[in-house]
Length: 103
Image (tube, rainbow, N blue to C red; front, side, top):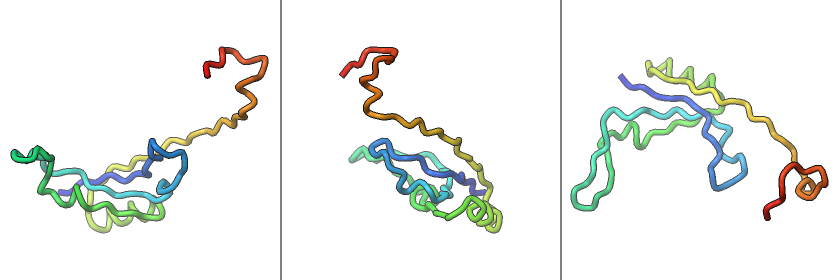
């Protein structure tokens, strides 16, 4: 039986923006181990469901309903809420700063 995970993708490490993080993703888990090509050394797999299929949904409920409708076992990963700590550039130079400014 196919197993999948439903999650909200995190922000990329290279950007500070939130693009492509608002849609829920259903991604299948691999059914077989990846193999190494003896000639080139590349890693590959014959499992197309896990390597090529990535479904996007506007809401978590839509993704869960799709998985249930098609009989797919799934793990639901609910993201933790992050608090934003507003900062100002001037805080780097304030007198009451606890540690030295190292730049």
